[in-house]
Length: 140
Image (cartoon, rainbow, N blue to C red; front, top):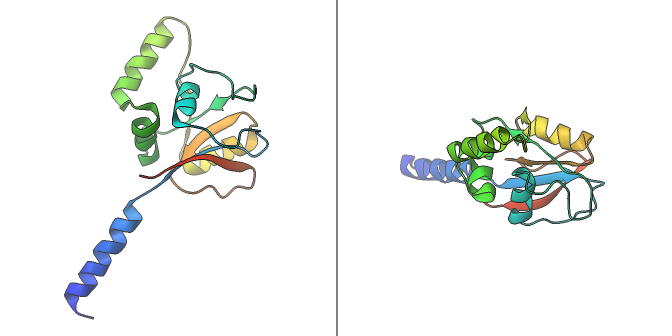
């Protein structure tokens, strides 16, 4: 294979692996089977505190520097990090709500949701834990 073809193959491979889907997950025992981005946005902005089935929701965030969080903020919350900081500072000043806790990266979010029936989080990789299920998958 010529050097040009190797380079083209390498670039194609890198562009395919650089794309990442976003998976929103809940506990496997949660009766919800699918959710819209708007429903998830309401839970993560604490505009709603319960899933449609009535169970209490416990949303968790990834670390600010994670690619999954940036994608989630843009595609689901429709806000950037600065806009979210402003949103939460206003909410906390009024004494109404605090932002969802930050638990780390994909592995920590998956472990939290697997351990909490009301847990809801997002991953930059497909979930692998048997105690979670995907309720929304967004293409990057």
